[in-house]
Each structure stands twice: as C-alpha cells, then as structure tokens.
Length: 84
Image (cartoon, rainbow, N blue to C red; front, side):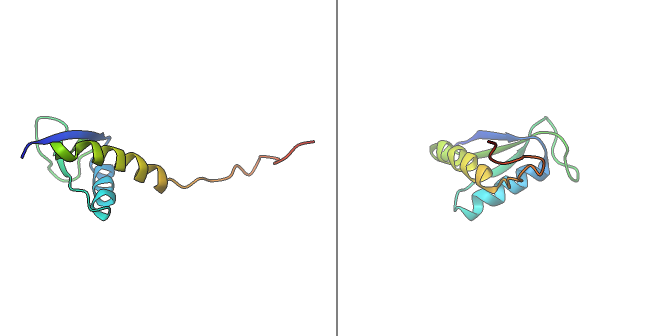
C-alpha cells in the first residue's frame, strides 16, 4: 500500500489536530515531517499528512469540510446590523 501526501499543516500542533478530526471521522492518516529530519519534540515546521493512495482524495475533501466546520465565527461587535 502506497501512502501519499494529501495536505501540509503549518506546524505539528495543527497537523495533530487535523489528524484527530480525521480519526474521529474514521479516516486513516499519518504524519510525516515536512523537512528532511524527524521530530525532536514539538515541531514548528510544516508537517505532511499522508493517507493510502486510494483514500487520499477522500481524506483531503473530508479535511477541508471538517476544518471549515470547526471554525467558530465571531460576530463583529461594531457592526450596526440592518441600516435604513
């Protein structure tokens, strides 16, 4: 089975959150260092998310949907609402 990159997170913490979201949706993925060395503690460098080749497109689509759903919108307190 070949694993392919389907997304790149800006850092390890974000990658782990994305991996957890996908895991909760029953989608397999693993993390890979975005550079030539492995993790030594928490990495602030980009981290690749990989999935089995036949599931990569599903994982990418699911991640886009899950990340968008997890964002919390905050109303702008300075907005006036409907204007006449």
